[in-house]
Length: 118
Length: 116
Image 1 (spheres, rainbow over the protein chains, first blue to last red):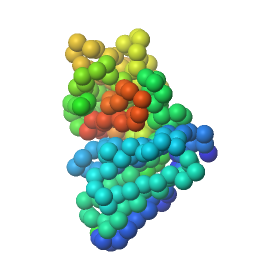
Image 2 (cartoon, rainbow over the protein chains, first blue to last red):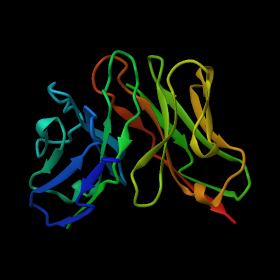
Image 3 (tube, rainbow over the protein chains, first blue to last red):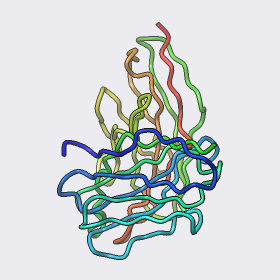
């Protein structure tokens, strides 16, 4: 597609429920990233997928968070048993190759999913 | 680990005036630095980036930034502000310079307001 798309754009859920957030990267991009933007913490890296390599999950805040990327394209971020502190904007980004040697690529961001946990 | 500090969470300038948004970084290796802009209810858009080479980097919408290693700074400037520049601006450093995840470490952001 023309850009990174995310769905839903807004999600309101009750504490304790599970939520799934979807990201469609730019067609042909092999690297995909999830970030979280919250009032208290700013923008934080969550997880990174590069091709068929094992994902870098070092930014996930707890084991309630997980993500998968099927077929090297679409990614789903799942938050189980949501808590109020999970309320944030979840941003997805993609880049063409990820990190290849020392070449630093531009990450293209989607519009985000605004999650509110009541 | 790398870190980024943006001085001033809010900056207000008059239309036509100079825009200066400050960014200082901490890094134990040569940094790759970025400025992103976020308009209301939109994702982040890359303004410019510094990797290697010329330390004065020009970006979109008339913005530029200068990498100063001695000052560990990467301030963003624009000579003449326009109303459409009102947005939130984020400075970021790439935490990983070896093959692997390009984890961007962001500053807290600076909200720019333009007064008519």
